[in-house]
Length: 456
Image 1 (cartoon, rainbow, N blue to C red):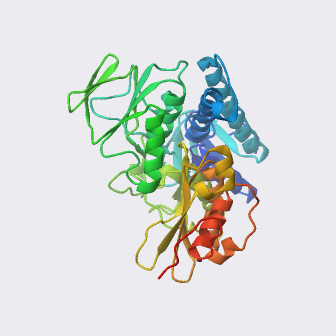
Image 2: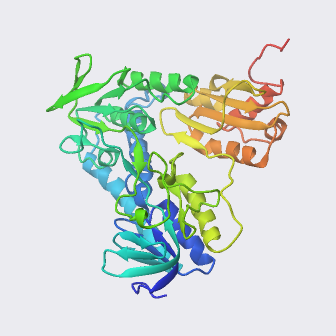
Image 3: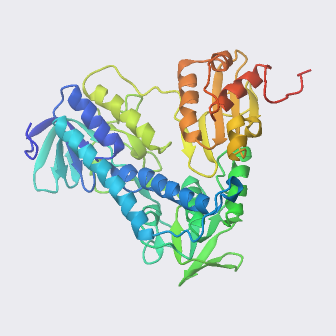
């Protein structure tokens, strides 16, 4: 197929060029399918252009800036460090642009057709495109992702922005109020605090309310040390100019107000009502373990089908759904989807960390780890959960580099590894990853670098 020429019928029509969509498109093309992707904005979607990559880029820049000013303990003294927000934004935009261009190039090399615009289902075999043409398909994939949930009384506009806009500012705000206290609020609040912004986080209950409280306690303490003020159990009632008023009557400084209360599925204008596709009570598209909707011709992946709304889940599903579209006996049957909060310190989880019902949990502190002591990063731990057969059921890591370390845990759970498998695997020294090995050894009652009283 020649780029730029739209075929009358395709084997697979992909709606959305985000990480789930473009991965599915490329894999399907590798399997010999004729594929067209319809994308209204930028290839790579939110992850590459507005969320994952931009936020982690800003976080790294903020870390460098903060550490440059707070490394006297290592004998490093920096005077007059400053940040150029326009240069910072340019780097972030350039990084996203390189990745977007890379995705487009890969699609071209794999003979995937890209059509700019939107698509609406006319029926279970036809899409109407905004370029005025229609497209017949054998299979269609809905990979339209999600969008920030708006809040009544704090509608987006003016100085009220969503997380995407918070990662596109050309200035460092003097003050910022973040409504919401999930991982997005924690990441954005922490990075701007390190850049010098006075940050307030307004939490309906508390910071990261769905996560392990041992981990949250460390993250929350660090946020407060950075000057972030957390208003737990608070509700914003109104805003005026550069301030937000809470239900208690207290007014918070807020040059910028970030509404980060969650994400909802993006299905607007898709015309799913013209198909047999069903959605649940929250508007997410329903699929089976082969990622097929209630309409056998239509598949779906990623955020649009619900939690966990994570890019790496969508990537894996993109591979699976392409194979399903190609007639292979594939299914989305992964046991675990690791999750990472790029906080300070990072928090990473694979599986479940809950004691009881035959599950035990052992905790190894980073205060006993050589690498952590040397770099003054002892503010963390590794927890490992296991059953009566010593099978690893979950791992939680609170540490620098937790985002990289958690893959070992995910692999262990997927492969049915035991504590002994991890404990007997040589981990390089000195690294943070040794803490996973140490936690497994501790669970086996053979800890070396931390004393655990003998079990009676």
